[in-house]
Amino acid sequence: MRRAGCYSNLRDGEGSGGRGGGLSIPNLITLGRILLVPVVVWAIASGEMRFAFLLFLVAAISDAVDGFLAKRFGMTTELGAYLDPLADKVLIVSIYLTLGFAGNIPRWIVILVVSRDIMIVGAILLSWLVDKPVTVKPLMVSKLNTAVQIIYAGLVLASFGFALDTGWLLTLVMALVAVLTLLSVGFYVAEWVRHMNEAEAGH
Image (tube, rainbow, N blue to C red):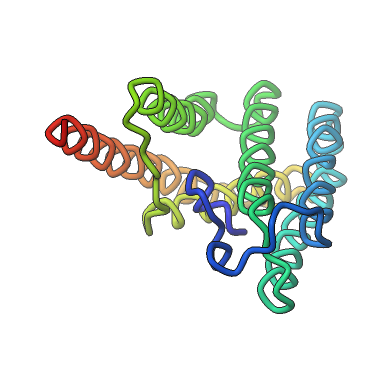
């Protein structure tokens, strides 16, 4: 998935070659992924973990497909640049929150993952409010963090849905999620502080 750049203005390759904000085929696929979110949440809350995993797999495949179509056939749009990361983040946050409330994953990891996104969005909004808008660029650590978050969610759903013994692997991946989430927050905060200081000095 490409949600690693979810706070940047443009999806990879969607800046200069974009074709406005129309509902292209990739955008429709992305909208379909957003519509899957409440169904996945219902499946997890109802204990239908196998169904939830299959829906999660469909969402992952759809993300790869819309990205391929957008780049391969020049269907990139500015709307897609915002829709795609939004769909990815809504899916991830919703799954983590539901798994946490259902007691399938530790709540501290849910708080950590969700708090990271709240902090980043809050920092961006604050920079706008003080008339010092910042464009947050996707960092490598953020891309790794998102990938590991997805792997962890998939492993949890698969382990409950198919009764897989993934104890040590789940623990390892969860630890990686925690470490990469904290590193991501640190890098983004440092970048935000640098931007605000430069903006202040420019005045």
